[in-house]
Length: 173
Image 1 (cartoon, rainbow, N blue to C red):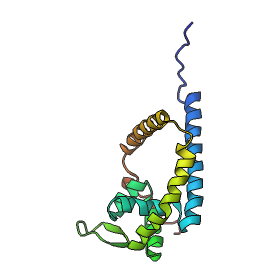
Image 2: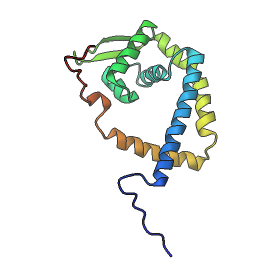
Image 3: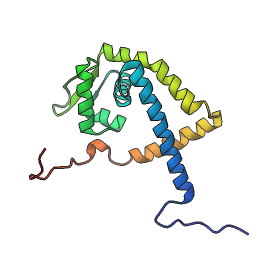
Image 4: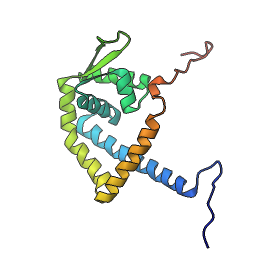
């Protein structure tokens, strides 16, 4: 006897719920451990490290919009983080020579040194928590699955393209 197709209707199927929760729990746990390591090792948050590492990978400079889309972070949040990193001497901000409306964020030598200082421990945390329990076949399958999911999500308009929410005139800032 064959099993009938299961149509969960408008909700998620049990396998989808379990997969979604496993994914979010694993990502949350990994993020927590990475955050702890980075704060202890170099005194930066995970998003600050991600900004610096993304800049390093991109040759040292990106526009704020490119960076916001690359690290999947809001424009206002990135502006705040860039200000903190600039005060710490890890980045500089300047107008883009190609587009006067854009701001470039550039990695300083100190910022690059901080990334290089953190990288060995960061890699160790990621390997221990994420990759050690996986076989080569698991890694290949996970990489393929996550790349397809990421690419599907990135096909949507980037967060930087989302309209900004306006406060009503009567609401205080």
